Amino acid sequence: QLQLVESGGGLVHAGGSLRLSCAASWHTLEHYAIGWFRQAPGKEREGVSSIDSSGEDLRYVDSAKGRFTISRNNAENTVYLQMNSLKPEDTAVYFCAAMTLIAGLPSLSPHDYEIWGRGTQVTVSS
Image 1 (cartoon, rainbow, N blue to C red):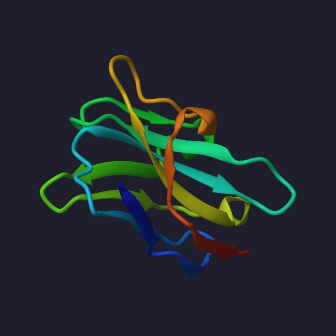
Image 2: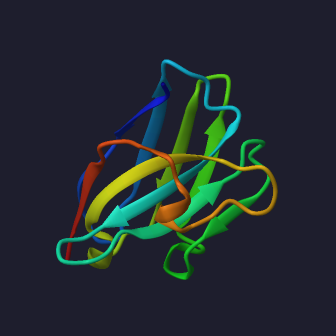
Image 3: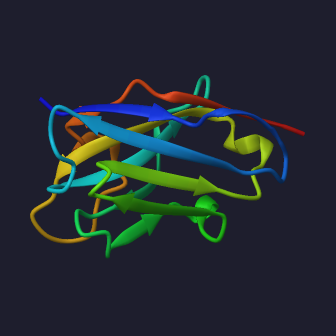
């Protein structure tokens, strides 16, 4: 069974950067689309970015466009989320998740994802 572990979260000042990693174990990531999601206290889980298995099709929520970059290294079995120009409203627990994608763009809906990591906290101070 595929397992996902997020890392790279932390506390940064507004305008700073973090790079989150989503590492897979017990199974290869190369056949899965991967999504990054976040959940702030009292709010629903939100799709931030997603990438298909080849790394060619990418999606971003509007608030992340121009600031976040998703990428994957299938040889390292890892997906990354580079986050620049961070804002206090980016504060949340960030999760990665995997889905089997047959065709089309990778989803940003949490309901479409089958396997989840436990999350990493990102806190952006003003």
